[in-house]
Image (cartoon, rainbow, N blue to C red; front, side, top):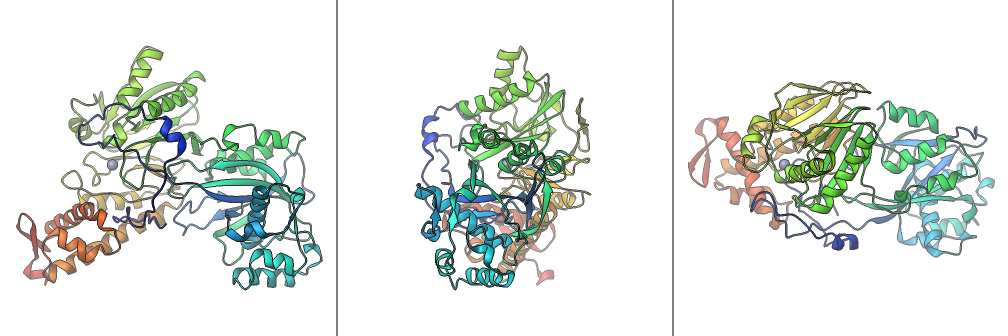
Length: 555
Ligand SMILES: [Zn+2]
């Protein structure tokens, strides 16, 4: 499927039929939505089925076993999915992987995943982990790689033709991790540890999705994450932390000691230290199925941002995670709302009920004045957050979050910027996948583009933590992409009006040819937002309730 993470209304294009996760059926108990009609609580969001994938953690030959060197790589910042993240070479299984010769392995599925990992490793960094490959010259390996990448030879054929085979004993299984259900692409990834053959050097290949790679001591890599210098997904962090304790006899046991390494869904994701992303299931806009709640914490305090699930089981799971932080001696300072939308605020009361019952008191809720006004009689807001206000958390590390008033998607929208690390909690202004709806009158395209430009001007931005989907580790590229996507749409809309197309519905049919007709009603809202902007700029004029024409001056 193609889920475009641009700023347009591409969100329902090309979405294949998905089946529900079996575990979802167990959790159908839900609370009444907080605003009648605003949430379609009876409709469960469908989730992506994880695809098989494998990754290889390459260990350097003759490395120091107390703090081994491993090969890690940065994913290209041009990639829509997890661009800029640090990862191990790997990728998705291909149908022919199962046909590759793998010795000393009785289980065909394991053999296929070993084959997948070995193939991806060869394709991405040129290391051929096959028995018999030690006799090949560098030139021969390069020509094999060329055969594979140009698809002259399939992977199993290539191994057979050169008399090579894979041996399961060269690959140590160290866990299977499933991408949390908040991502547009989900993988069930098998991780293997393997020694790099002494005569081979990993090098990022031309066709790779990786942009750079290096040998690094696992402990040093983990420290770089602790200093918020790199961003990585939970299994990569777990691997670094586990390997940093040395290549001990119980290494595999330590790798598999967390339930997430045995396919249990990861709930608590710490892309950056002290920022927990906790996706909760919400009746949000497709293709999203979850809204990210963020727990920002120091040694003493916790901020809860956007507890958005109306479902009781999800509220309990979130409360468990917060309780865990509380049990280590912290207190919850405030619940903060980025904006008014139900999928960001529906869990506030549930969480506060929990705090009252378990800890004796509710936690104050803070939001923009306009958000508070819109939520009157639904969620009581105790304090208004002001533009440019700095929220200083007590304890270590020193976390200061600057509130940035960034309306456009919603009137009282805030982003929160951590100047020290460059992290920006971007609410629904930028999301990890799917697109942002600008729906008047709550939405305003002029203000939205101004807000994006304000965000673009922030110095030192390192990561965006959006309201949906994974973190964005290429923030400037992403913001530029959002702005240019909107402006391109707007140009087409203006051209359509100039040629006589007058109503938002007709404009959608002309301009949104890349979007499924099912999404046309939503697209019409975005067109209206663009028309309002163009009218404010004097380029179009509204002639009746549903009609616009271009102004004479601009024609
Ligand atoms: Zn929203």
